[in-house]
Image (cartoon, rainbow, N blue to C red; front, side, top):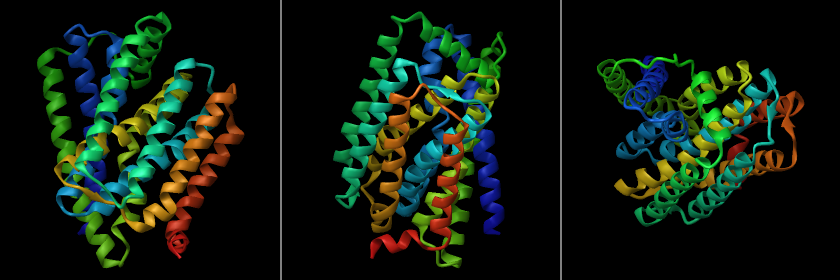
Length: 324
């Protein structure tokens, strides 16, 4: 039964995430909001809705390991798996100056997340500054990007990569799709957490491991789908921006919201192993975007091998040895 719940949860999350983003974008376009605003906010943060709902559901259920593991595992998957798949399809250019700045922001947010995790718990007092940083960063990105016409083209390319038609849906239809997407994401997160917790208990697997692997991969499916389509359509900068924006939202947004409802305890195993994998992957990724012209297929292959090795470490229990 738990496997049916997990499968149903993942399916609803993927469907709901797609409907949520599409409904929100068409609603914004119907109201006359520019592609720039849509690209900076709705598309970038909308794909993070599954992670937010899953982490909230896990926190309310007392499964802190899944809540934390979901974010850490998603950020690792975003870099190693999604960038790897995207660059394997089509090399990703790294010449956009905003990507370099946003990458440094992502690195700073990751270092802050790791530092807070070493205290043993992320409290509401930790969450508020993270949420404030996200709001300030979003406002700064919006105001600064308005000065460069290239950003408007990039935002339109973001919509093209998502497959949106030039004519948006009517407001009633867009609103209906948006609400249906929210319902699917909420129900899917409930099913996924219920099934994942049962699996963890039946196999005596830690909830953190389930969150870091199965749940994290499931909630990253919307980002993966978006990045693959963007790479296929040669919008490599969209794929890169999607990863950076998603990781920033995962840390500053989700970890800025979920702990407001109660402190999140950080499992020792995550601190000892997974935080370092996340930080290492982030450093490598930011270094590549800062000093390389593009991320080619060789690097893509290394990233994918790195992700499969990370999953293998959890499967064979190697990650648990870090605590010793």
